[in-house]
Amino acid sequence: MFSIPTKFNLAKAAVFKDTPAYVQFYITARCNLTCEQCNIIYANADVRECSLYEINKMADNFAKMGVAIILLTGGEPFARKDLPDIIKAFESRGVHVRMQTNGFASEEQIVKCIESGGRDISISLDSLQPHNQDKINGQFKDSWHKALKSISLFTKHLPKKGSFASLGCVLSKSNLEEVKDVIRFGTKISWFTSLVPIHVSNYAHPRGFRTFDQKMKFEDCHFDKIDNLIEDIRRMRKQGYLLYDSDQYLDDIKRFTKGLETSWRSKNDNVCDSPNLYFAVLPNGHFQPCCDFRIKNSYPTYADDFPKKYKEKSFRDEVFETTSACDGCMYGSYPEITISLRYMSAKIQRAKTFFSAPPKKNNWPLSYEELVDISQDILNSNAKEN
Amino acid sequence: MPKKIKFESFIYRFLIESREFKNNFAETDIKLFDEFIKNINFEYINKKVVVTSYKDESEIKLEIPLDEQFFYIKGDTEESQNKQKKEFPDISSDPVMDINKDYFLNLVKKIYEKYLLSNSNGNIPG
Image 1 (cartoon, rainbow over the protein chains, first blue to last red):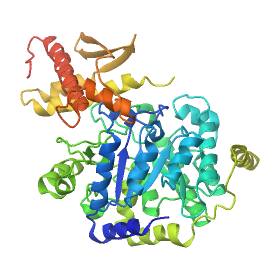
Image 2 (image 1 turned 90 degrees about the vertical axis):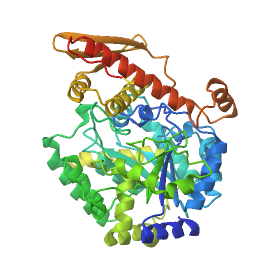
Image 3 (image 1 turned 135 degrees about the vertical axis):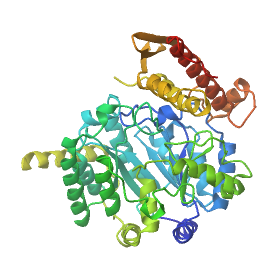
Image 4 (image 1 turned 180 degrees about the horizontal axis):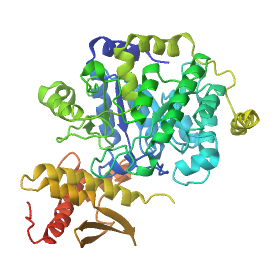
């Protein structure tokens, strides 16, 4: 799936731990949905969106800095009309693009993005029950069906070889009983699933991505269910189900949901690896350590001197002031990159995922109707078992 | 019901600048300010945000129209770029962010002043 420059930059990051292997670019805060677990569309609303000209300059800088992978996220990234040009800006410079959508994308947009070099897609799917997905997405009708239509279009237009497709599933009270079905569904259609537990904060501690809704917080009565779920899906992965998450990450989900300290930052004095291995970029193109925090000064990543600034001690100190005060997160990519690049067992597991047994995708393309049938079959077999 | 996007954006930005306010004003009584945030409430009424905080028996209330902030400024087309350049003088790499920051810091200050004034012993910071 990865090009030679991307593999080289990932290897460099693994050895030296000071190459930004991964950047999350929040290209817009605009979104067609208001998902109950998401706050980022409000947190990033206050900045302007940068221009394609600035994004091209940013791509120049990131190529120079050895960025291996850039996630184009939002809001809903497909809300930006110039998304194909943004993808081209990075891919043409050897930076691997991961796209994200909630199902908003039209066939024309999807085709253009794939033609621009996008081969890696993640679609949000939290449930196989349409009404539950619609509730999670903020009571927007047909959002589940739209997500399935998008999945169908990607299976139609993505090449079977050299592409990667995954479902992003947020673990919350709303779908605790349904996560295994999402993984079963993903596996049937040759898509991986990766889990992120819901993050909740309060007015005294506002964080970019975390909902303020205290009703969403896991309670004591959920902890056993979560532990059992994690062990079940770990077993499923061993049986060949396409679950992306590492063992250590799964264990940390159990700890995090109980409010306990997670393990993934322990090799770095309980500080994450931002900005050494990863960082985030706001819609205006400015640097931020992650989706939850900004730093005091502004550093436009498209500025000519950003690669130099990135290495300066004063910049590093400013970021460290924020990251060292953070009590941790479980936002999928940051923990997984630290785990993959700092722990040998995870390295081996990840290498297996990408190199030794990639899913065959023999049943691609899948029509929307076929996807609905697969989903219904999974729900029906559950009903029979019960 | 879908959340009100501008309303939620207002709440988040207000809380973020409240933290800035708390960090930057040495004379602020931190305990009192924390109480102010702890008791704060936001309501969406007729395209306005009603910010309410409670101190002892008194209620401090301020109505703010939701068309005074600059949220979701597009930049993905030539047209939207031209609009950005026309509406916001090129004083920094992101004038929109700077204007919003000043706006919300002033708003926090204004509401907190009201809150302090509801107590005869209060000191007005800033």
